[in-house]
Length: 105
Image (cartoon, rainbow, N blue to C red; front, side):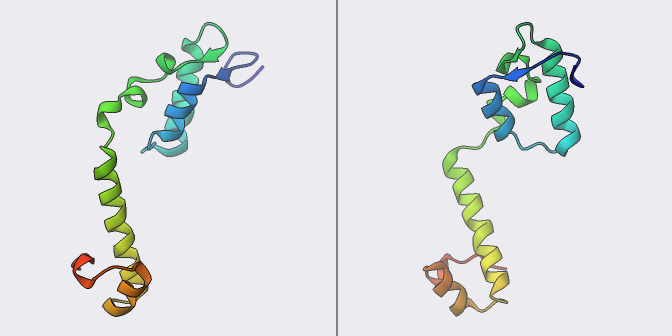
């Protein structure tokens, strides 16, 4: 018997995708609690998306892809600039962009 109180629990494809995509601000403990909750809710031995906590299923909290890419790109440029110790010329060479496309500070 597993720690989940069931002999064997599977995770459905959609539920697995949601679990992998969620940001898990509470880290492992939050993930563990979500799985335990979902395992208690499933009736056929498979955790489905509807068994997961509402916050994991709430896609309205997700960013638009363009917004996410813009944010990730900006963060990447900041890290490259930091790794180049503020050397704008080197950073633009590494990134393959113009200085005007680098974040200020």
